[in-house]
Picture (tube, rainbow, N blue to C red):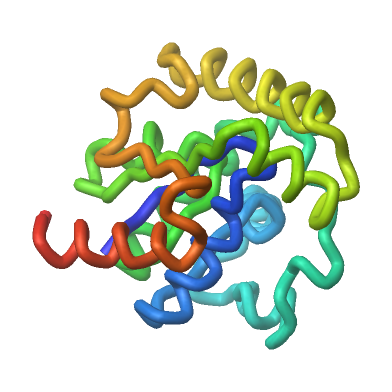
Length: 192
């Protein structure tokens, strides 16, 4: 089972992915892990030789306890191809996983992956932005612009366009746990 989760910054998509991975007992691949795997693959390592897992990187702690910056860095621009290759190799080798961001819905389009996009209204993002990220809504929206720019450039699509996802989920209405439930029910009732 392959699942991709795109998200607005501050909408809770990363947390949804983390809970979903635990409940479905499948690997979670976020920006940091995909970048490390891509780097090792570029050096000629074989995927089966790597011991880079979400648990090895983060342990049993939630990544929210030591949040790292999600902003797309300038050097990410030359990483699209290696990261795309890493995502495809992970999908081919492990046959299951949850991929957060990294244009994964586009990269895994031919893999019959489930694709979800997590959004939230400005009030929800303002509160979550202050509590979780210590950022203002305008800072969150600047990150969204960077994500959209990156996604649009490499895919030729429009970031967050509903037609490119199985479902768009508004966390402000469902809550984090509700979004997890919606995704699990959708996957259970729509086999690919």
